[in-house]
Image (cartoon, rainbow, N blue to C red):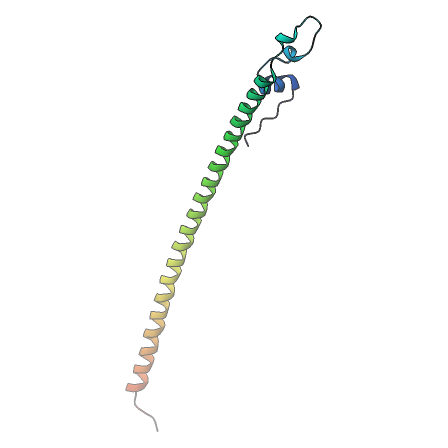
Length: 114
């Protein structure tokens, strides 16, 4: 993300350097003073690199925030499912305890056969 692939190398050069490709080519009719200075080229190149890195950082941050949000949502769902399961198991334990008590009561009150 954040990386744009361009096929036209002259267009890429113009974007990186900030000048048309043809201006940077040496020609017999062009004087040395007309050529862009290395400082300008380096500055433009660095600015473009910074913008690209900032964009990539922004995209990575957004991706990670989204991933954390999904993980939190998953954890909340698992917590809710666990609560439901725990409640169901507690009800089941209570039901079995009630059945056990009824069985004990039955055997303690039933007449003994000898």
